[in-house]
Length: 131
Image (cartoon, rainbow, N blue to C red):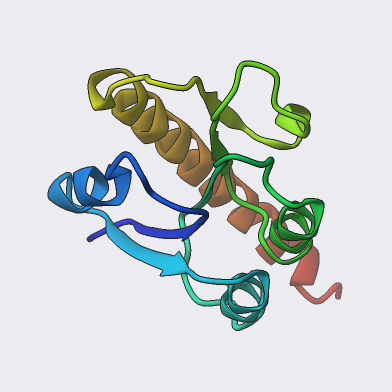
């Protein structure tokens, strides 16, 4: 099954093509509103990836992702000192090649999936009727 990624920001380094070649389904959100709408629909998304360009990722985009998505949030940095670095689960330094960031992303997604599957039994137990 293909992992689904939502992206926000301009992909000048062709990372989305690399992700597609690695078997990911990638949907690039053109605006904060589109990102928010897709996340609010609760469609299956494995990660949200944001890219810095000349300016930092807008705080509103980070807030939308954190409000409507509980999975991994990844940042591809454009500078060494990102303004909102602490909001992300994985920060990929500028000019890192796919051989560096793709395994890190895979590990993050695997770990996130294991954690979310571990939460499912606890949620079922909490919803069981008490007799």
